Image (cartoon, rainbow, N blue to C red):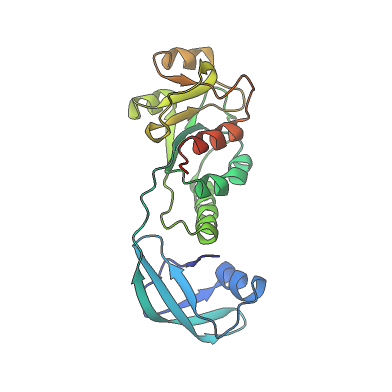
Length: 224
């Protein structure tokens, strides 16, 4: 763990409880005298806290010092991803975050599961997963998530985005401008008509799962 997330990091004193407390003092067996590094994922600062008291279910921390660590500009891919089973999204979300994906825009594709909806509760759960991933990998910016109505609205909003689909070319896709990824059933004939003028990229002649395509798209922007 590179740091502990707390929305109030930076205040003179704060209370560490619930999941954060459990992870630090019960799961990781952190000593009650050990100083902790905290971030709020909103500013460029790293905050060092020392414990004033560690009780059975909470710890009171006091700010010791503040150090500026500017966020690294995220130059990763922008995934424009048709909605699939949210449990499957949750499985790969930490990896996409670690690979530096700059943003994910979800849209309802023709073949998306209609029973799936990204309501407030699910987006909040995604946010908690991303925070946990940031704590582990040290990423200092919280990946933005966006919900779009359908493919047409995505194409209108991101005119430079390319498409990841079978039958496309073997290269030339700019991951930072946007990569459109279909659901498990792929794109419908009507959707293909909408993006027929777009750059279409195909990783191989193999059929990828939607999650596999998302991971492949994320890898396109990785730099050595």
